[in-house]
Length: 250
Image: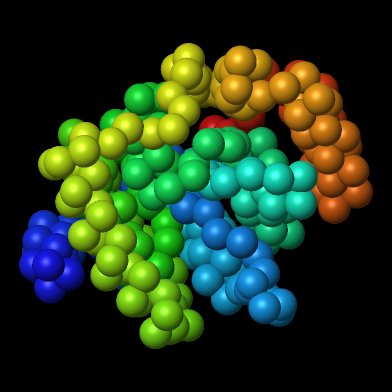
């Protein structure tokens, strides 16, 4: 079953993956798939930093104008989107060009939410090749014009075994269970203008997040300010929570 799933996904999605920044077409939105900055046993997670480097290089090359950072924020100490934002800023991406998706619990959630919640019908997915294949397959099965940029891959047998099993689960989710994201909620408008884009309700609705959680997120944002070179916009994002302004420039 894993062999069949791999053949289906690789044959369908392989042509939409790119290794070269020069060759990849422009998309307004990049979708950076989340992972933790640290290994379970301690130490830096190379997959995280390889993805950050790939996203930053795409942005600097003018191949994307904004980056949706999509991942899990299950606990106070585990928040993939905020970790990605901090790392992207350190890599030279302005905070104004980064959009949070706090409900990217699985690859399927991140992809479908990019379409149904963030309104992006065409995206550049950013991850390692093994995940990009599955992500592009999910996106195109959901009617999106998705391509992907392959980050460097440090290689891990454990990760690849898990990925082969995930491909089987992917087909079951799509064609048997018809699985939808854990949270969808109100669509989030990212309205493009010449100088600004407005993003509304970036966090899940209050029905899904307690007031205490929102306050905790605000405090976390304020504590992160010291790590950002873009303090004014960071303060603005932190205080507004549900409405933030992103300036993409000309």
